[in-house]
Image (cartoon, rainbow, N blue to C red; front, top):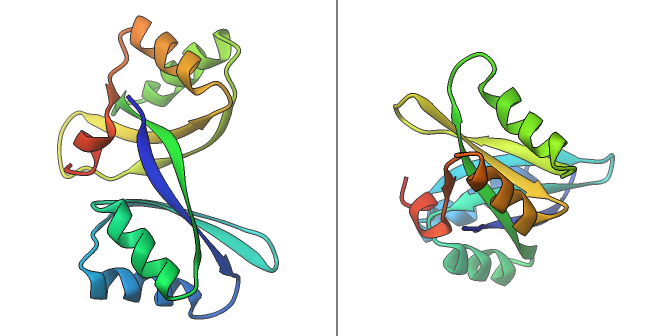
Length: 143
């Protein structure tokens, strides 16, 4: 029930994001979701793409440091309180959210959030037990 994201470590300077997106564009990789976390000198670009292996190879060939990370994609009711419900379930189970970001979907009454947890398997179990839809990685990359 986990998905895979790629994380790219980049210098925090003008043009580096464009370099990454240019490589992905030239390789025919479609970005499905992304988040950027930065410090004064470096940043981490986290991506859900349609072909992790191809993206990783192209970026590494161009000198980028790339790492694959397991994350969890969760369907969230797209209404006031939808995200709170999920976070409250996790809080009550003692599970920490290390980070999260949104996955853009064209239509529907559900939003999709990408989560990284400190206790991934426990998080998946508690969410499923509470009736929350968790999306597997192969489905996620085709949305």
